[in-house]
Image (cartoon, rainbow, N blue to C red):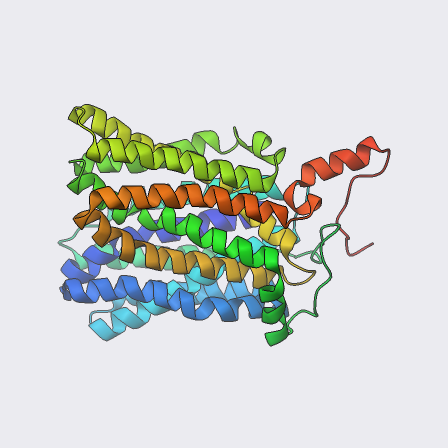
Length: 424
């Protein structure tokens, strides 16, 4: 588990190391223009959407570790070739390889966490994953920003070469991991044989709770993550008159809230029903959008508007800290035995779709109609609470409140639910 967490941190470091500077690199340093730079960013999303359905099946059939190693090698080759590419075609192909590799890392690592954890430790493991991902992204972006020089192509070549080296280092590290046989949460439904292809997809679509969670996940990612660097930032600059430095402060407040609150809220979250936690996040994010409305549509001073806008990002961070030990363990507990990889990939695909659609919808709406924009996403946040409550009605006691289910078993004098291990 420690090696897997190091893997999460390093993969996030690689992502934060280069992605913030891709646009500048392609448009200005390589002088390929804004259109090509925009296509590169689009290719990242398209590549993820293409490979994720196949990644789930591969994880089920081959196991998460071989899939992760293949994704790391692909990402390393994409990063290295991107640093050397001078033409538009080479840049786009390199970006596709890098985007595909990075997209597959997420469900592969998540499935490894599921296989190396028990229901009692899974929430804490995913909280640690989210914490290290944010830390890796922040540190990567900070170091990368000090290495690049827009007047020297060689500085970007060095940047991408270091990213490739990080991925190859991670290959060497993860190759030493010996995965246990995948545990199964007590009370989880029996499933089809791993690698069952279309039957596995039919089974996933036939799992009403999982379909509801995917719909809920799409709204969550669309209304929050899909707005961070597009709609909400455009709204802040255009409607609230926020400076770029204040926007940077807001993003830093989001990361700081996650770092500070992640383990502070963990114990609270673990002892509550997961559906209620997600519903509470919807309310918190509705308050965040209310603060954003005040920042852009209120009549207070610029200082008050800036403070309200920064608090919006901080409140989003609080919600994220509550979701990290909730969503991923719930996906794992809904998955039949041997199907965690396919369920993780399906949920990652939903997230990627939301991240692709969110900026496309939010950006233009925020720039042209700031009032309807903020009201729309405030209503989306309240919709999250409604969807979460409905989801809770379809979950078993163990899926929705595993800590409470274990407590009741112990109170009756029985043993707490344990996963079935290879030895058992």
